[in-house]
Image (cartoon, rainbow, N blue to C red; front, top):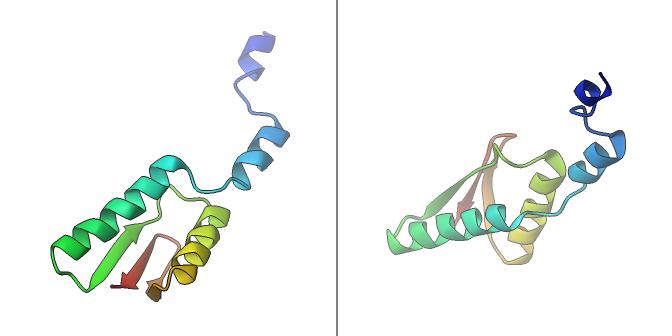
Length: 83
């Protein structure tokens, strides 16, 4: 019977996941979107944030700004940046 309840994650695990930095997969996705837009001579890059939690979204915004990108539009679901 206790095995059924093991599927519910501990609060510490959930809290830790919420404070995570960007994952390697998320970083690779952002890099790919920027490179693809540059190769296609697009002046804007759309980054889908569906796999990002709020802390990761804030971290991504900080990283992009520190690298000189201008955030054109922000929502909970995506970021659009100027190239």
